[in-house]
Image 1 (tube, protein in one colour):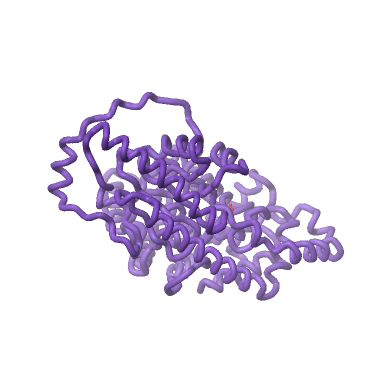
Image 2 (spheres, protein in one colour):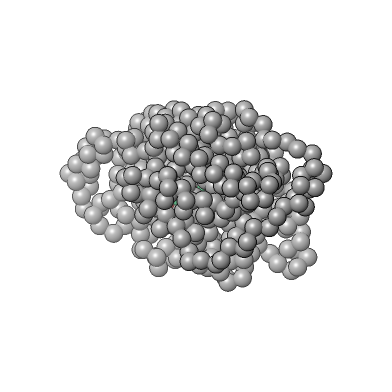
Length: 440
Ligand SMILES: Cc1ncc(COP(=O)(O)O)c(C=O)c1O
């Protein structure tokens, strides 16, 4: 992912890879005046170390932001962190010994993959459908783990406008997940940076609101509602977890930036952040629509994709003979366009024919052009495959279906598909190669 970000920063590349907000939305004038005010009025505390758990004033703002999504948090249960990313790291560091089981979605947030790997967690990924994580599969998995004498340390989930799949956990499944957590005394880490960026439909209760903060740990972030550059996120957790996390945080970085905490305190002091969120939501909704239209126009009939009601990402799945890692190399080299290959969202090499597409960072014209260019390389791969094998294959109908898409996925009788699969000529095996861009 790091390599990929470096390549996509090139000005000639259209990047649909990152999860970045559009820089033109950053409130430059407000930022300048607030920083001046901070320099005048709270220079000492802004430039000094702060408490490990964060400033009370910052936590008060966090409580307000959470209230906007129907959650009631207590400042005592909050630790302010260096981005939401640090929460994933600290919670894993606190709870996981090598070999311990962590459960997450398949696909999962690509940034969580290296965290789980670095603490040597045994990660079990639960498949999703258009309503988010398959809770029935989760229950079967938990039962199987129990039979094997294994108890997961926590379930990590991005239930709303998931990164990377764009799908949202239905209310019924949310309620069942919280029930399971309570029945089994199982911790759930709810990662919710996108919940407030909703473009249509009714708001769903966060897991934290349903549980009241007993078994659900909550990860929030200011990155998508203000700025990722300030590196501010937070964790809400019950005291026994919080105490350990604070020790872990002391070891990691002593405290989160006092300066950016003061900035957040000032910026979120009045209603302007709500206006900002509603403005960027309108902008991103239009871009999502532009991407969906472009996908319908430029992607081949064999592809399918999700239709997110919020957030920043669409997950597209191609026929399984296409490896999106290879496709990315070709797309970058020949068409100067980037996306995140699906394998980055798995710990076991799955996801190789999927890709994550971001629609927040560039304008509608670039989105359209980018999708057109990716569509071109995809079509070339499909044509090549058809020529080599004399076959034409569609995506597996059981893979993550699009959400309420206008265009239905190609449906074929299963028997027919199985028959055709039996005739497929094997392509030569790919040689193992050095890790390339986005291969994290
Ligand atoms: C699901 C998810 N969790 C956590 C993060 C980390 O966010 P940050 O550290 O900027 O708060 C991201 C960033 O894109 C994300 O998508």
